[in-house]
Length: 431
Picture 1: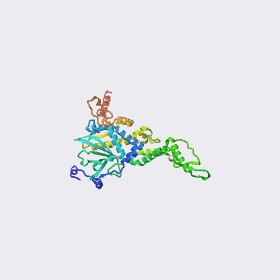
Picture 2: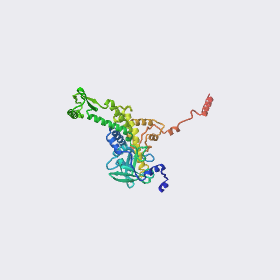
Picture 3: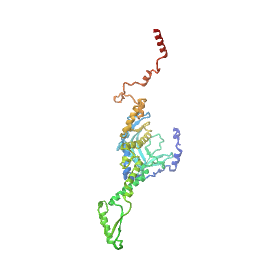
Picture 4: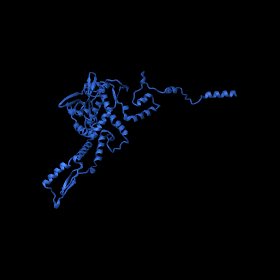
């Protein structure tokens, strides 16, 4: 622990520092093959591609909200302007889409913050396969090395928490790696391989006239069980030109000379091709947290309807992922923008409209809650009266504060006993 850490009262983790000593000052290479994940899953598998695109696009479409330490909403803030236009080539939606896509493919996402003076001016999403951690003595990266075509640049991270760090690393949990996250593709890799193999089998089958492999068996007269060279060459030429390939599908074959076609391999019925492919497709969707119904996979009855599946997808996958990302960004920019807290605006999600309406009715009918408590229960800040006509909340004029009602309430339960006795004496005197 250095002198600066003694001043601010911070102590390093002994376990983390011990784990880093073996690779101190050296690049830590990822054990995952990002290029294979990108090619085999994202580029060649329609289920994995659709799942990643659906997560990234839905997350990017959710607006964000900014709050201060007192949970008051911030409308105008320098960092909100940066997020609206992170760099000259991207808007907020494109930036989040790209970042989450990288994150879902590799299990890691990287943001570079370009600072000018005391403010962050630009944000860039960096390719995960180009980033390498330089092990530091504290148990976390002392630098990140970005390599392109043999040339590299090191982003220094040893700033002791007093300045804005240039790189934000978001990652999924990995049980066997101290530096990098585990990709969802790795969990679904077997299912992706099987699905790709099934698609390849289907393509090869169509190229072969949709017929399984087989062989000709010679059953000639007088025990002849072979063809002459001329017969063999002629048969081979006819098969190649007239019967092989998808363009010759359905053409009838005329066999002569005692030839008999013997199928080899399993038939489509034996393989249960369609059911098996749908099953592994559901496993791929499960790895990414996307309900199979949303990906158009037939035979899935997990959800009663599409609306329920879409709501579960946002609640269980999109919103938690976006909350993690915005929370990491909020923590990352604290040295530059103290107290800034970013959250997704879930009230703008159409898939949660029914759920939101039910919550509003339930909280609105709770008469024992104050207006500010109701607003807090629904995720809003306390009401602040304003002179602006459109910023006021109108209430029923016949209502009165509960304190006034309590002050005017008689809790005696009946007339005073003394008063009753006086009335009785007056009645006796009159008689």
